[in-house]
Length: 287
Image (cartoon, rainbow, N blue to C red; front, side, top):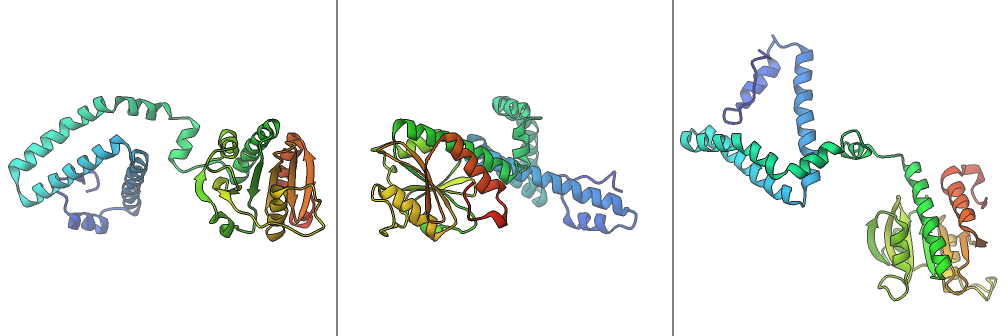
């Protein structure tokens, strides 16, 4: 019975499917394989929709889905002529699609066996691996800001969420890149004032306002950026990176303390040790 069971879009009978699943002659293994077959097809269809969403291929697929629905309904209602025309059209429509979307199909085939295939199936690199990559990107951006003496303020969120600070700025949810960070802080650009918030390996928001530390124990030569960094590090467990606009020097604020005059290499090592390698018992110490 299993070998003779086929789904015809024009003759689908859901009672037949139920009877098939309940049939005593069908072994449990064949039933599981049948369900697995349907699940895989649905999964691939879902991923295909995700890929083409918002593209011209997506608009065409909507039309194809409508044609399939009309074909099914016409067969169910017994509209023989309409059903024949639509079935005939769909048969040759596959060839038309291959011709029209030849570039897209070629790119999809080229992705087989590459890292992009992992993204297709939702398999991404580990959080820590991506975090380390982003730390390198941030260090590169900070070094560029320092070299050009462009002021910068970057908050790296840790265990304590800083949604209230994120909501003071402009939401982005963008991938981290050195070019983007430098461009954001470039003077006279719309979002250069305020801080960048890094959350869940993304640039969550920009132009954010940080709490200002104004106690008398802070050195008088420190400007607003450094005071904001200290204030933020006191109210959360975030690590805050600061680039001085006046001197181009790099600093890190954590737990209310400021560590100044860092190199790109120092910055990278400190961030890796405190964001990735740090153990609970060592928290509270800059390494």
